Length: 479
Image (cartoon, rainbow, N blue to C red; front, side, top):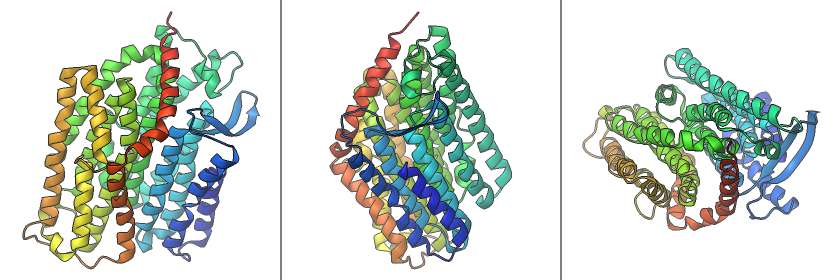
């Protein structure tokens, strides 16, 4: 519970103190949740055994609805990602935006922790919706143009998807023996094929919008592009992981009987998204828009890997969820630095920036190589596992998915060349050390995970095996 309460308290303090306290202090304080997670695991004697251990469980307003939180390897990795990136996002805030952005980001940190730890269906839905509130205001208050139109489209897409998920949860609740939203109770519900398809459709719609999977992506590019850098980082680095996490933790085990129906559909749509996002990214001039479409391409591969239902695909997908969060936040952070110091984020207005700051150019290049999945960078191990799983599922599908290797290299290297190399039309003002530290941390992770991916795989493997067993048991209940 501490991991949710602490960011909430910090959010309230930040709202009342305004800009009186430096953003660096808030960034350091937001790390507290990581220490809370370590304490929680030690206090409850939680080991990496794959079991989703309860850390908090009290009835809410009925015996069927409990405020239940839990942690296992998968949840722990998502909490680590959330509470590692939030301080970096806070440090990226411009001083004039600090007063309103920091409380909203800290509130969202609490809600995201709740999403990943919720073991009650209704609590999962509540935290899912709570995470939408701060990002809505972040985008609405600081979007660069067409703020209301872009933000309301994003809100409607997400909210309608959430209602579909709620309908599925309520249906499962009514089918439980004790009328309970507890994860184990929902998991034990036996659905026939038709029921499972409808329940699965509700879950899948909510998660497909959040990820997003083609063709539920139309809100994404404009929202990522027009939102402030911090909003883009939150949306792409952490919030879309809610959809991928939900796909693995809630959709597949709860509606396993429907997987045979949805599997080819989702994989085909995901592969279309891989190619579509990459091709569109190659043609972009705006750096943020380029990253938005590259994100669509990368998460499409993760979704496809999950839906192969193979241990290799799910392991690679979970690893790539963490990797994508690191890389996409680093890319948006780099764009924020370029825009604030060079005065533009349009490739046609940039070029030759490397000569003004060699360290920044080197760090930028490492992030680009990591995103392009060059060996010994963090993007390589997960992408290799994902492509293997898709090839094993279907060779032709694997060939199309494998185009991401070429296409990603094209748009990422084009992005670096046009912004950092050549004669150029802009100059890069001096970048302070404080701005470079978060980027140095992210680049260190790009290298470390690329060299030692097994550190993460060992942590998540028992939890993945447990989830795969739940999916297998659910798929076996057909009538």
